Length: 313
Image: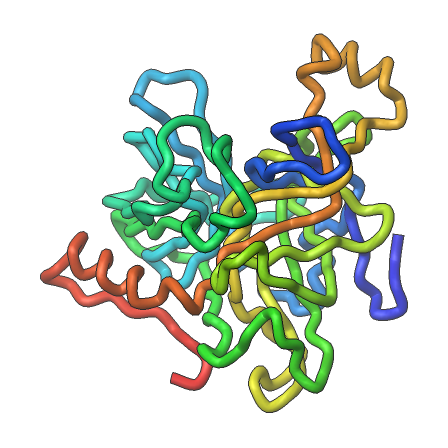
């Protein structure tokens, strides 16, 4: 698929808490039939998009699989729920796209925002209500044991760039994820999609939602992925660089299933195991968490100051 701007859009899959038209959010999001990351028109996403694997213990077979954004060669931001309850974390920088190969660096330490789940215990977002959206700050920062040798950190968008107030020149937003096939099974590639607007989620000033283009879906699996913006106006100069505006937290939207449902049921071992998918991606706004990130970096490594780039500073 393609567009006049040469951008290929992709489908993404999501897991929903309830089977209704619009439902409570769950972890976001992997992609299906989308644009391979090698076609990124800005050419820089592979430098800051990282894969994250988190385990409860060294011998654990199962692990959480998320994405994140490198804001420095030794600093990564991701979704808070990706690291909740985990004791071993490693970050993988992309060294090759086709096929995927990585530079793997263990985490030295990490911090999870105390309100990543709105202050609730238990399963992520199971107590979510739109009226309480302002309570959720699903974000975490990871300090690596050593700097990446190949990464190219992403700069944060200007502090006065409000995703909910489009600038004079319409921005292009990007979100990322692992590719999935038509049965929603993970493939060995990374993909992206684009959208053109963001709206506040509920009563929150730091959590936004965006509906992806028609025919695109969002799915569980790649929480923590960066949401970036490229725009040409007085706030963000040029269309040749990604600026980080947020971290994917949840997905919402109308439920969807693979078209070949019989094959999907056989693949997944039952209809209840097929990921549920929607058409809305949500993200945590970085602007509201910069001070918290700096505070946690100081606590984690007080003897060695760490910094990251913000447009205009």
